[in-house]
Length: 350
Image (cartoon, rainbow, N blue to C red; front, side, top):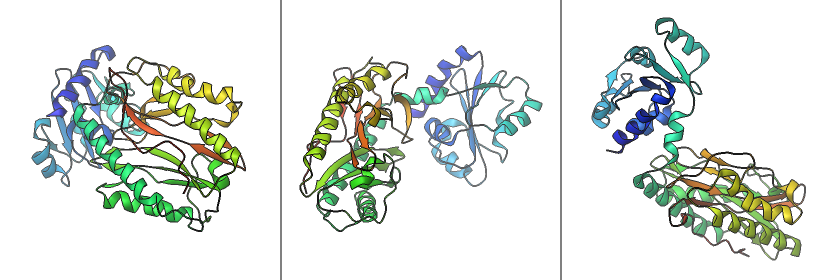
């Protein structure tokens, strides 16, 4: 079972915080460590790797059937049921409310706030997780191939977004990984544009940022296409971003720093005079969340381990005129990155 080894990795990190257990309350982290998806659950992981999972009557039978190795118990007050089961207990400070912390502190004065411990462990994926991500990315690729053939002048951004999301679910996704972005013409200058009723016009570039979710794991891909012949300046802009994205992908390797990966792509854009038109980071980790550690950008610290899925997504955005973004999901490997999103990066002219 992968959950036992995941909890062992969490347990190994506890001594550095001088605690004997971690009370995990963030739902995505409870799922990662036990397999249980629930709106009311917590798991206590002790320094010897043992676990106690608490959930209420709505989920307890599922927990007993699917998470027996986590020692499930029934409780409505899941944190209260677990907080006193070990000597020095850490809580997830980035998840637990101040009110809840102080409520527990009255009976358990040894509680210690920590942040990001499970998130750090989640960064490195096991091969089972990578296989699920691979499937999610394959569905994302296939959905793009289906939908791109339908994009013609006159269809709206909302229609394209709806087609993408419908295609992903029909191909086997449990749901879209996030609300799809479709930005045409001047809307391409807005990195997180919400699809509108704007009709696509001849010569437009259309940026599509979308992904499939499979078994809780999130794919992420962005492609920019041309609908009809684009202006020469748009072709040049696309080629600049393509070169920057390729430089970023080539820099992905085990041991690289988050800053250096960003700099590899950003340098290409800066040399072309568009430094102020690339305002976001190069990418981020993906997994049980669409945005998770590591985050790649200027000033970001830390080295990238082996088996870390992440995105490489440079963009150039010209206010009022348009923009381009190209994004892939990759996995770091000792012998070079594994590309999970395989659709061509060449400019498609529809």
